[in-house]
Length: 78
Length: 418
Image 1 (cartoon, rainbow over the protein chains, first blue to last red):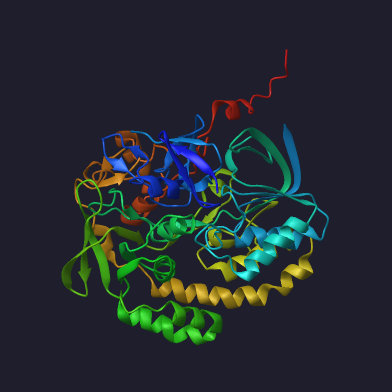
Image 2: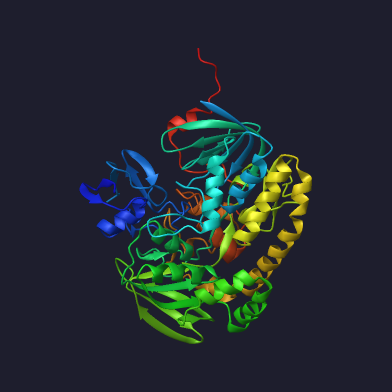
């Protein structure tokens, strides 16, 4: 069971859980704020829409196509 | 670091897996690339809340056992890097893959049409919700409405219910006569008949579509046009998808011609560009059975085994018949083109409203004036929607095809070191 940090909070999830799912398990599931200030969450679930982009260990990644691994740090965009 | 493949396959869903396995016995050096963490595509998506069907598991094991197939997961194509060379990127690095033959198995994405409230957190695609649940998204005791069109609505509902969600309504826009006519043909494909029986749900309504997602910070309910009446339902999630559209962008960038909205192929699954093949949903929506047989034909043809490829033509024709019946039954109601209001955002990356687009005459003009389609998704969502709403054909994409790191783009620099 990997343990990761989501916006500074520790979370343990089942093996194979996506980062998108982990965001919903630990909070409201939102990933970013749009250019006009709307909160957004994953939409397409399959790597197309880019709504779920987050920062993982300093790199821009898609939460829906990234699996949780032990020790990763995920930051959403406030 | 650069890499060479006799056969490069883009996409490891059913078509790509079948193509790799069909080509493997030739001994060709095969590279199978996919942007997801695991092979299987959208239909065979593995995860903590998913059980992979046996045929998918077997194909995955056979792929692992082939020493001449190298798999790169979590990897995207970023740009063309010269003749028969593609720049790709994974989580850690960028590199160039050169190839002799290429098979495009880039699949399809959902057609997501704009309607008031569709940007609220809690609204997803229909297949999108299914994918997120399989990846571990919790839906236990949540109230769901699933809307749009096609058999994917029932499949998504089944996954949600299996994981403890309460599905209040499945809203299919097609009319009862169209869906009934399709169901009456299902005995021609017995496994599809069985699937439809197991997936049936008493909350399914034909002639029903979403008018608006309701809520301020997050989804709180939906307004539906249900068989002539307007109704509202309180719910926690709305999953809405209007069928599937082929992913043709990479094919277009490589100079493959389109036939309608799909990559044009001949009987050998060859595109109009020599040595470039395409198979599965990127050549037109048809389901996993059609994708598997098209992939196998492309794989055999790409390594010159034309007899094995030809032997599969009857099976392809049978599943093409199913695809044709499906596409006819779930034709979209023209009413769906008027769901968006003037202030409804169409481009979610650049937050461009419908009113800023409706006055333009084509995609390029609208882009230049509004930044529509110029954000992170590169028009993959709004481009599909605007093609449906206004008939605007998106142009071939320009690199980078997806957001990429500077270090990756630097791999395109072929200046010899000083």
